Length: 157
Image 1 (cartoon, helix red, strand yellow):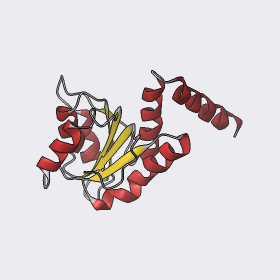
Image 2 (image 1 turned 180 degrees about the horizontal axis):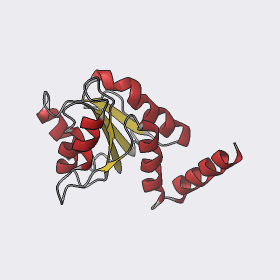
Image 3 (image 1 turned 90 degrees about the vertical axis):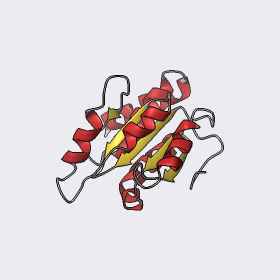
């Protein structure tokens, strides 16, 4: 199902287009640096709705605990994913050529009651990975310590 998957993946990463890969690589790399296994898939909410439904609907059963969804332009992906899973979803709005990503940002933060999506800055893939690790850290002290260490490293820089 996934284009890139680790059998122990805790974070699922989905983008709507191959063109989003460059930005979302920041999340993949940050999670890897933190020792958090992830899986990655490209699936558009508009062009591949059945694939998105299957991937998001089975995410919790596959052991995922958090999902990061990145999209631009008609940025419905995070909301669609959130509709199909009980897991927390973090949206990464992508910078666009039309409105600089403001269109993506606004569509992601204006979710209806009952379908929340946490949203980071435009092209904020690294912050999405940090937030995902913080969420994991609420139940697993290893990931909490990863964040404590990360913040200490920033303070000492």
